[in-house]
Amino acid sequence: MQKDGKSIRREYKTHARAVGALGKWFSGNKGMALLYQPGKQPVVYRSKHELPIVKRSTQTNFYRTKAWRELRLSILLASDCSCKICGNTSEKGAVLHVDHIKPRSLYPELALDEGNLQVLCEDCNIAKSNNDV
Ligand SMILES: [Zn+2]
Image (tube, rainbow, N blue to C red; front, side, top):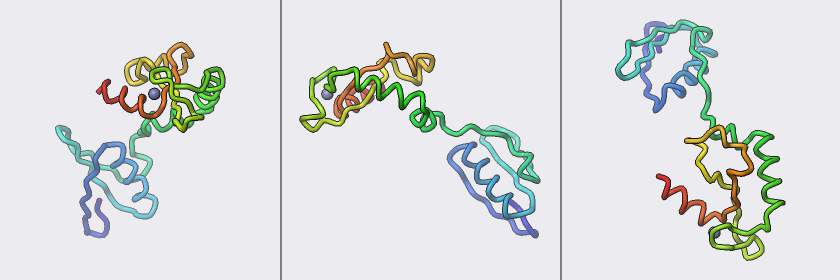
């Protein structure tokens, strides 16, 4: 980022974060920004309007959607409030999660499919996601 002949260099973990940061920077500054990405030509931006539109991580957005929250609640209410794997219940102090049997990262079309959801306690859910990795 350059302003009045001064330049600042910052690094960001992801392209989306860099673009987000440039957007903020342009809101308070006039100048020019050079965006470097590994393996690509640097891109010059002179205003916020030139920045690409980047989507935020869909993971956080998904779990905030009304559709998911309502479905999750209905799955919990329809279940007997016990973990499908170990049988632990919320009455015994288990924290229950509604889990995607087929992971959402691989089967996004099943994200809101009731048949792809199961109730797991926190421990089993964490153990399961470790296995997936
Ligand atoms: Zn369990």
